[in-house]
Image (cartoon, rainbow, N blue to C red; front, side):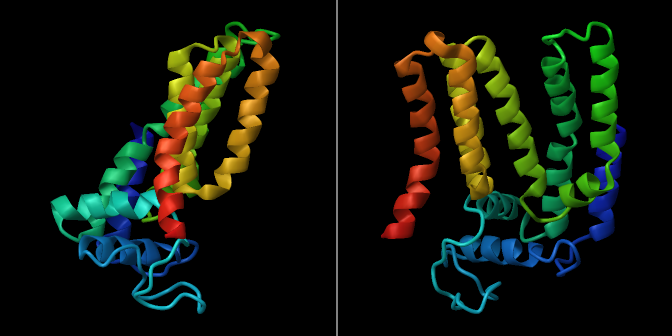
Length: 231
């Protein structure tokens, strides 16, 4: 609750204006992309972030998913940044719960932490709820807040797979790493490392068809953007 109130307060403080404020300079470009998508101009910049990108020309630079999420909010509410900030702040206020679950999962062992696990997880959740940079970025029009949520989800899904590599868990893992990769493409090497970790921990319990399921879900999310970039 405290984390949600802090994030909502920050959203109200930042308000409806989208300005290049440090360290959230990039929010003006995400806002720009969302407005152009909403206007039917496509994935283009009016004010490019780098000189080698021409205004109005299609680009593959920047997150593929986040501007579309913004455009979806603007489609409903109008181009009001404050509404997007509030929606994002409410979603990101769930991250402490994710962290609590992840830490409890890690501390199951070996060696098991027993009753101490709950206390440590609660401290981790509290830090996540009140950490100033998390509060700030969760209310800016940037990828960081949602991206970190997908990272925590991916880590939790990886630990679940290492314990029991069932098909439903592979499906959840594929969805998590696919969304994380769409929010910030830098996650893709991390996804490969997480996959290797599952192979190492689960070994012979891993079935090819389950891996194919996860790969298919991730590919269904990522490949349309890849194909678009080469057309």
